[in-house]
Length: 199
Length: 199
Image (cartoon, rainbow over all chains, first blue to last red; front, side):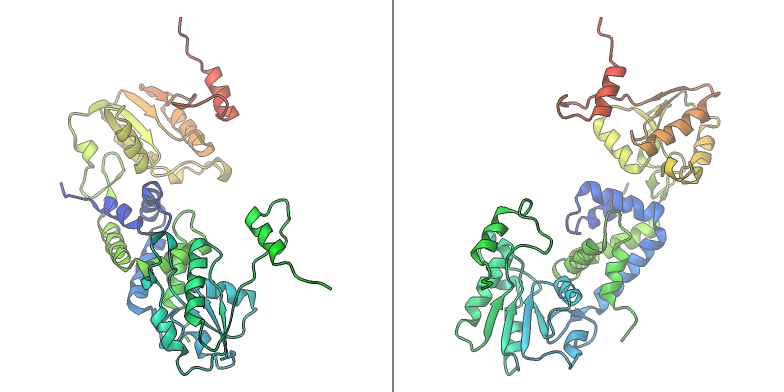
């Protein structure tokens, strides 16, 4: 008998995916091999292609296959406004919301305050290089409103402290369609604290 | 620009996994390419090996690489008792519980009553072939206690109706450590209905 059979190896390997434990991994392996052979073949090919071809945009650090991603390559975008986000999915969300006409910088990580504010997970050096001799005038910090996102925003704010950029962070408050009864206390407190003057 | 880039292709391909929607797939692709390159390489290799090597046990239909799985190859198992389950994970659970010393048959699917009781998803023909000229005397139906599991159990019970096997199904009732206050009404009703005589 071999030390580990192919099915167990696949189950083990699937646990690399976020939020996939032993039970889900076992179910995934079963689905792939029994009911989704075509999908499994496509996943194999896609993973192979991605591992070979996906690189980082030289300017904004997001995933892309050429030197520049399609946002950075788009000359109609406002070159003076730079939005800093955590990961490529955030760029996609922002583009769907269609509310930012500038460029992005993708940190590809967050600072984790529970693990000692290690800065090696975020592409700070690449960000500094990006800003050198650039047309950027305004920086919008669009990290998450979590402990990690707050810590990352703090690090960025410190970095820009003595630099001549206008720096802002996304507003906090009630979500659209939010009802006071159901929103969490922290959000509610923030909404009151940062209340908007009407007259 | 290509019709679909490698990152989007991987995100699309990951949606073949059960319970993975667009958002999770995007996050998985990001994790694989940014933070878990080694894990992604291992997943690639494991998937490739599994797609090539994993076959079905000729006797019990579970996944294995040779002709017989390790349970069927074990001659100390009771050849007269056959437990019928839905998928390989169920065999693993049963073996962990260590309460069945016989053999298994894995249906590799369930009958779905909501989709017209299509029998093509379960390995009925292979089961009939398995039973021909076998030493099996007792059959334990160990399908799930869901609509699909109940329907599958019904199909099996019908199949064995006029055949000379002792046939049973797993008991229903309160789970170990279950408290009446928290158990669902259906389970409670079943536990009362199938109550065990003590004296």
